[in-house]
Image (cartoon, rainbow, N blue to C red; front, top):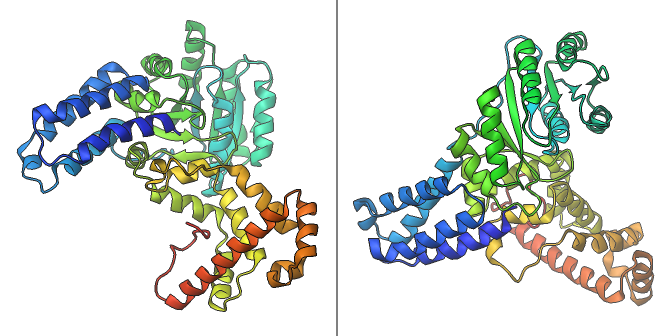
Length: 440
């Protein structure tokens, strides 16, 4: 996510870190570089100008001049200003006192509204809510079928009435939600390829009919300033409460994320980082600012790990480590848990400093041969790798579609990991954060 922006900003910020003294003259070039990077990332030019002016004003203050490390202090100012730009703090969804709480999803066609509706429903279900999806997009071909498909994948009820008035669908949806004891109704509405009056009139009519607790505007993160302009147009007519940025797993420049909050004044509440229904994150401005500046995001990494890891399995593994009984079966289990956390490139982006390690290539495909090799072993071989002789290695390589060299490499890596596990178990008090898979 934002790889190009992260690398370019890191280069610009690096010049600030080494400064022993801050003056208007020596800070001019680094700030000019940061402004150029922001504009290349498709950040609104007024937003970029205001951002740089705020950083410069604070950097030239007496507090910074008296600092022991002025360069590092300016980097902190850049970080703090980016947090302010992105919205200061995370904004939770609001729910009504009387169920169902209606969450109305709006946006242009192709922005990812229908998929987001399913992602949001699945996320809320994990938190103990009972959501229902309502298909009020009667314009886009197959939109209703798509919502039913998404609902089935997320194991959520879906209500639809076919090609009728969206206002009638929304009203009937509330009745249906109450009958099914659903406390949240997620309303998927129609979009257009561009903003037009008939669409806005329809959305205003739906809003007036059901009085949604929240209206969320879904913006395609890859469209840059077009997303910002659409966000403003929807805000003028619907006065929505929050923004969702989708498709941030692609080659998004990042300009929309940095501009949309400043231009609209509405908080970004969620970001979609992939096509799978579990690839939805609550938006935290401070964490995103740290990611963009290459500082990592350990809190989100831990949260992802806790969602992926079964605590019962973690306790069993801890006991095995204490008994010095870590096997290839356990190793395979750890690999599978890491995969549940999402694409490795995204997970790696949350680790501080990973963006600077340009010689390290993070590739999800690297896990495939490892899983294949272990899966091609017998139970005895997984539990007692020392029995794997030359002929067994050839058989395992053939069965996994890999080479003997790759099998040897895995066994060598596993042996090194076993030694590390022994050392950790002997250290006793120093432990990994609870819930994190091996290697994190």
